[in-house]
Length: 116
Image 1 (cartoon, rainbow, N blue to C red):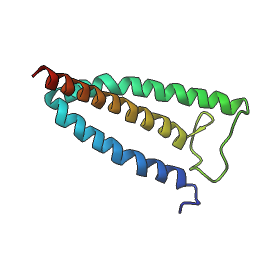
Image 2: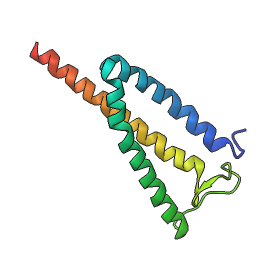
Image 3: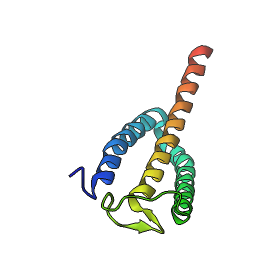
Image 4: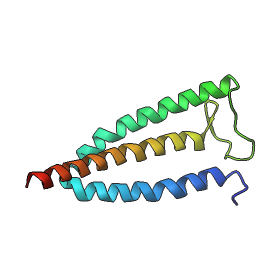
């Protein structure tokens, strides 16, 4: 199945979803009742960056800078960009945003530890 049109999507989901789940659990454990507010703060910028990168990819494909091999993705496109590529940009942007929120939590804990 790894040499089929499903390969990109399977690999993408296999490495991103477990990390997003772990990050989400850590975020909820740290921020507790503020978790919803933190997610509302970090997810919109991640989505904006994901869309921006997808548009840049569309422009690169349309000018012939690069392309995607046939049969290596599902064949569903948003503009000229394969769906899996759009998901890649969105999911990696979410990973980075959640990572920054968790990094902020670590810095906050370190400051609190030094203050006590």
